[in-house]
Amino acid sequence: MTPTTADQARRLLDLHTQPDILVLPNVWDVVSAQVIAATPGVQALATASHSIASTFGYPDGERIPLDLHLDMVRRIVQAVSLPVSMDMEAGYGNPGETARRAIEIGVVGGNLEDGMRPLGEAVAAVQAVMEAGRAAGVDFVLNARTDAVAHARPDQSRSEVIREAITRGLAFLEAGAPVVFVPGLVARGEIQEVSDALGPQKLTLISVPGASLAARELQTLGVARLSTGPFTQRVALTALQDAAAELIAGGTLPATTRPLN
Image 1: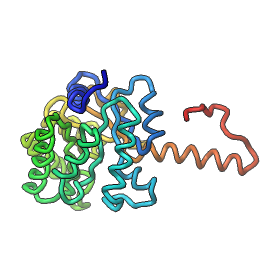
Image 2: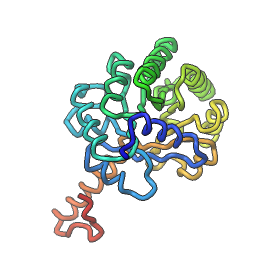
Image 3: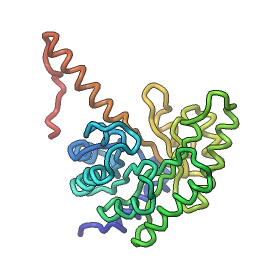
Image 4: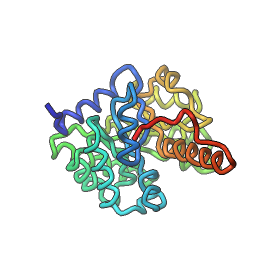
């Protein structure tokens, strides 16, 4: 029997509370979603707004039209059988309505950026998304993002930055978000501090090439989820450019190339 949207939402929520960290290599189109979904151990998918925008030639930051963005996410949802979370950026001016439209196409979770707006506004946006889920009968898995670390000013003390991330994260949890996303957090001590403050299986992070701890290490720190944002697309594009350069230089395509499409 095909799972309903409510079933998929419950499954995604359960994956965030299990002892094992949930690892979500982000996807950006149908073929990337199918390849990741077919990878052993993958239990859910998350889209990357930056990568989807790049696919259509738009810069990041809600520059891609929402209709086009949602159409790609719809295609991804329809192409796989796993729960799908959508990067909704900052909500396109109406987080509740954007979440409602996403749920309508089968999305069961999503990222929402606070952009360091006043805390009251950011909390209201979280509440609007959670209300959209309740109205649809779905336990929407909102990954409420705070940019306290990613957008920290150079003159801010590190302790002040971490306190701000914790304050915002706790406010988002109180507003109903199941988990809190803190991009830019890579140092073990800071991760432990934020994880302890938010509680076990409440913190989610992004894996940054050459900077982040391994997923297995993050699991020991109580991190619930690890995603990759635009970096998985960059991995693919790096491999593409490197292969093209080797070919143009007189070589061949990699012998390890697999027929994944």
